[in-house]
Length: 492
Ligand SMILES: Cc1cc2nc3c(=O)[nH]c(=O)nc-3n(C[C@H](O)[C@H](O)[C@H](O)COP(=O)(O)OP(=O)(O)OC[C@H]3O[C@@H](n4cnc5c(N)ncnc54)[C@H](O)[C@@H]3O)c2cc1C
Image (cartoon, rainbow, N blue to C red):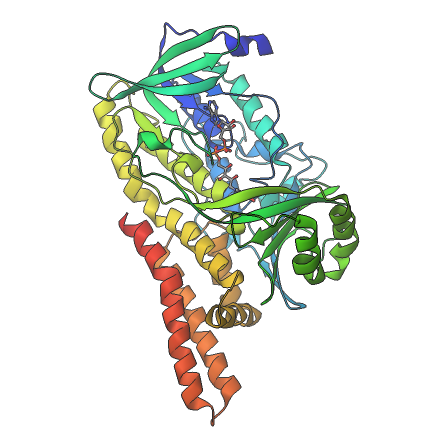
């Protein structure tokens, strides 16, 4: 199919599915549905490779979801860097946290009609070694240049004969007289505004979604901080193949991971959506001194070049998909703090669940589809809140702006330093492979109690009353940071 075909979609057809957006999640839904025999129209405003600094590290939970969909080879031939775990730095000390053992997890589910001819396994290429991924004893993630990964996903879409691709800007979600969704209006170059109809319309238009409000007017993300990013070149990673989190009581968290053999992404949190006027001076004063030694030459060069890119960090709890003919999914539905790098994992796990629920149904039976979408909202509460609440709680601790939070931050690092279960359990939440929100609660409060224990140890016998008071304050802070988000996610 040539690129001119991107403008020729037939508006006389009624498609089974109309998908708005071909970012990370749209192409996965399109490919999965096409393999289930559905006729799909996917509309993207620009099919050219995007240049974005989001969605660059995928945890094992996301890789496993891609395997279930038969799309894991999207990480191949893009110079992706295998990720084997995380390294956390705290005031010059560090702790390595490897990803979980495969033997401790359920086997990956292979979805019928989607997984075939070995497409649930990675291929050998210049940077991905099949043996390591397939036969290694631990789960692996991958980091990559976002645009290249998207191009691979979009190429998979292009290969499916049941999919029609369209380039154009969706300007309206169409409704009938009963207010049910029946498709979308697309502004197409040299063709004008054209209506396309489908039994089910997916809104997958990402972070800055225009159409998430089709669910509810108040489906609006809260924005409270930003990430300022830079590209480092030929950086010497302190722990190769690990994501890095750099913490300290005096600065907001910094995350850093290699995205290709040459390029490393660094994202520095800033505790407001209004950025400092002079980003260079802020970086030099508040970030540069805390960068680990081996990263400094590449960091200093990038800082001197001053090519910054920034994005707001958003939080958006999911709303129930209860509008006939509509499914809002991906970042349009649900967002969390990018510190945890869990956005793609949640979105892809949603796609797996969605396909299990509706993949074999007749989309013209819109009432049955709606019932399944209502269920999806509750079924996703096993895994999505874990990643969402963890990201918010970690950001609160890691960007600590009060003494109690700073104590919790230190307690968290000391907890990791204990090793064993104290790292094996938390990494499962981060990796997106432990779908148990209540276990996350237990771990979070174990960290809080350990922080209190450290306080008692530090204060000694004579300081007992002070330690007791501090302990109560730490516990109250922990409850405040964690509980409202958990309850919101579970009850909402
Ligand atoms: C700073 C930052 C860093 C992040 N880092 C990570 C990370 O390391 N790991 C991770 O897992 N997640 C990360 N995320 C989250 C991740 O990027 C998202 O979860 C993921 O991209 C969501 O995919 P999506 O398909 O829903 O949306 P997107 O990937 O944003 O795709 C939306 C698509 O819709 C198209 N579109 C929008 N409007 C229209 C329209 N009107 N008409 C036609 N097309 C339209 C857009 O062009 C785009 O292609 C990060 C997020 C941020 C903000």
